[in-house]
Length: 195
Image 1 (cartoon, rainbow, N blue to C red):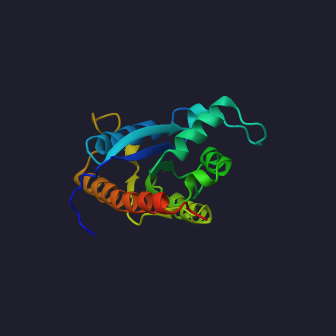
Image 2 (cartoon, helix red, strand yellow):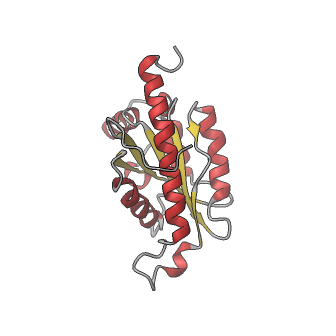
């Protein structure tokens, strides 16, 4: 795989999913950091879906206007990046609620992960999410961005998570999303998935 940035004829539509809804959450800090890196590239246009703003029901019946808007946004996406903390060795319930509320919108699209947490940096949450997205016929990319105890520097630094390692990991993840996003977008255009 090339490590260079490729400019596509039409930028990929990337949706950044903020997967935490807790009060006082660190997720927006991590998401803003990653979003800045993604929008700096010509490969992507970036939208954000924040589970903390959706107020999705726990049981799904008649679609609400907000749920329909979210469905349309996810359906129009070429690639996803999930920003997730690690709660009790896994990912948040609000994120699972969002994932389970939709189905075909995830299919045949690449999913990348940006995680944060304690000593594991959220990687256990990511490993659980890989199995969920496989069941939804999405393709998870191998490389991730993870932050270990990122809040330790938040009071003393303007950009507490900007490190050379994180910058390299973000570039690698975005490069992989370009490859998979372009390949799967072309495949879906040739033959809709599952048909």
